[in-house]
Image (cartoon, rainbow, N blue to C red):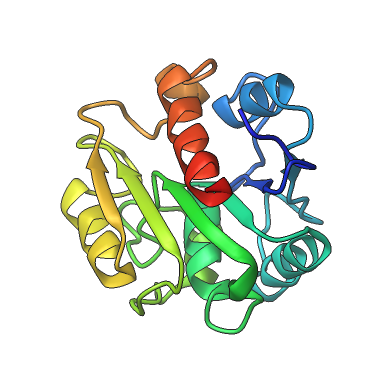
Length: 187
């Protein structure tokens, strides 16, 4: 697989709480040490402007092209960041399990500062992967996010929030999706 330093940078963007070593994003980084992680000052009390600034700093520091690999709240972060960030450096984004931050029924109050969810098309190739039984977002809403963002949508079936609690530590299918985006960006 093409790694950072071979023409493509991969930035891993965790959601609320960060992604620990047992999460598929942690597993992916352990397998591909060149993948950089977007760090946030506070993983448990997210502030939209701070998270946007942290993402922008990582993208600005990375050589182009960049493939973003976002999970959960970081998917919504990418949509907000795309309104004013260095999007020209982005080759593609994989957005996994976006939460419905506009829904008090589905998400905790700590993420409601990321509402409203931008509905503008993203200016780079985007793949959104959603679940039919994600407790943080209905499948129909995740599909609507993808449509607004001009993204391809993958229905992953009934797999929860695609996180550690749902059994997603090692995730070869996710790795394959990242590999496909990196390969396309390298071409």
